Amino acid sequence: MISILGIPYDADSSFLQGASHGPAVIRNAFRCPSTNTATEDEIELDGHPEISDAGDLELGSGQNARDHIEAAIRNLVVDGHKVLSLGGDHSITYPILRGYSSKFGKINVLQFDAHPDLYDEFDGHRYSHACPFARAFEDNIVAQLLQVGIRTMNAHQRTQADKFGVEIITARDFVETKIEISEPVYITLDLDVFDPAFAPGVSHYEPGGLSIRDVLNVIQHIDAPIIGADIVELNPTRDFQNITAMAAAKLMKELLAAML
Ligand code: MN
Ligand code: MN
Image (cartoon, rainbow, N blue to C red; front, side):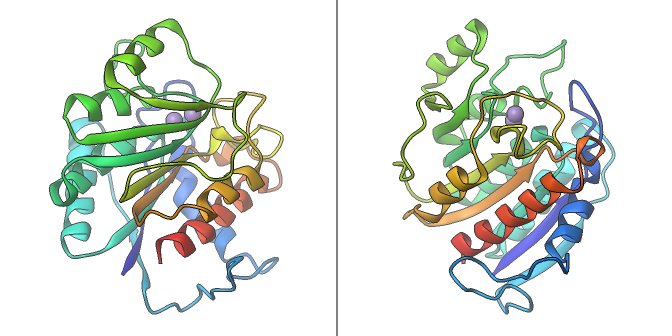
């Protein structure tokens, strides 16, 4: 079974708020009558017997919210569900991975992102959306982290990446549609991995990014079993004509297909 879980949380976004509106907007785009709910593999997702919607979490902020997210994920995965989480800012992936670790131990993570998100702290904050993978490594719950689409590496995060043994395919070096990752794999998709021309509805514009097709091709060629995924950083206040919302819904469809 796959559960779709909304995590409407943006309290740890460093630059702008708005990502808390992501889950509702992605669900609306998924249902938008301008398209349908079939995947590119011709799987009909509407009414699919293995997919259910677990609704949205009601969250406060800070450690309380992180504990809530971790517990909700843990309960679902221990029950045998795979979870597709809809964010929310990228800080939510740290408690999500903690929830996953209760069943899977150390996790292989495939991260699509313009940013490494490896800061030890950002603006004095250790749980910022700029830090989730540093926290996860410190908790010893990540076996492999492969980052794809990176184009904002700086000296501090290079030190962190080397310390933790992070594997990186930069946006500049991205060519292949088939990547090597240990199984099983958890996929975290920060929508700012895309060039802002394709996905302007994000808080942090970083030109020179991947296309929607680039990322779809990678996802569709993953052989490893996928235990879960998240789509984060949709900021509807920055979107134009729902371009990014529709892109997120498209990725949601293809991630669901890959997880089935
Ligand atoms: Mn990120
Ligand atoms: Mn990012």
